[in-house]
Image (cartoon, rainbow, N blue to C red; front, side, top):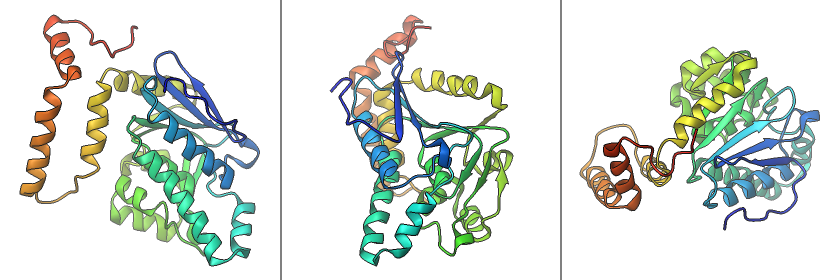
Length: 270
């Protein structure tokens, strides 16, 4: 399925790089990359296809123009307000499925964040595994200001920052800066705006140095782990997983490379 063809997109650009990094750039700068039915469908298709493409190691999600994402497109929201409950349910299910597609992607995902990140844009960041933010970015879980709530992004926000912080952000809808986003765990690294791409590249180099199958196993296992007491079922799951993975060709290559003091075969040449 290498370099599988995709249908032409109108709201999303794809740049495949030789190191196995796929850059997805939301391309609606006139509306600050706010999403509507089309962008949601294109993001869902992109992560579904790239997630099973063996030539792809990491997926970067970015936004073109001044801002990462202003959340939901206001015209889309106006159409939704005039639509039936059944139509709204279908829309919400599509949005939820897209966020799940990002969160469950077997490849590591990284958000390149800048400018304003509002409402559902925060959900996109929270659904990714990692996020690198410009130091002057600003965020808001803004839905309550319009008399609605951040329902679909809620589970991903809770996973990213914890239930108490997520509840506060949703209830107040207040703006907060990149420093607080880092403190809460919504993003994991900050950089000055002119150094943002270099900071993204540094994260990519760390991701590309790890075994791709090991990373897929990490994502699958950790999705099943929750804070709290470690039950016998969880202990057995973790033991079964490591026993199986230790016998894989990737694990043998990793150990061979370590003892031979060489780079493993999955690491790009510098």
